Image 1 (tube, rainbow, N blue to C red):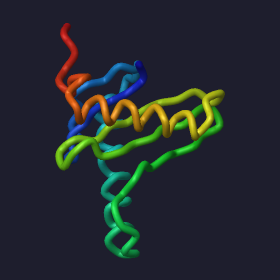
Image 2 (cartoon, rainbow, N blue to C red):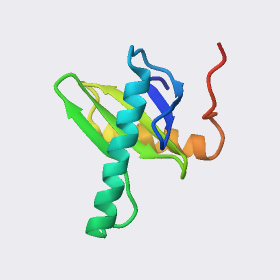
Image 3 (cartoon, rainbow, N blue to C red):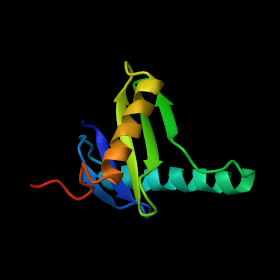
Length: 108
């Protein structure tokens, strides 16, 4: 699977498999959006935070906490449905939590 980023909850990129000139900015925005989600969770008492999805005319980006220190962001094309994106996030999050896929930096 490609087109994903792992970043810290502080917005530092750890692993990135998609092309972007603004890796640091994407990681920081991902952390900020996740923080907003946490604020809504607490303010509205809606329970555990699930996946946050941002839809655009050319694609979508979903993000979810992997653990207390890492956030997964997954980029999808405009042809991929939101349900498919959510399923991909589920499987990738599970693989990282079970250490099937490493959250560490890719080898150079």
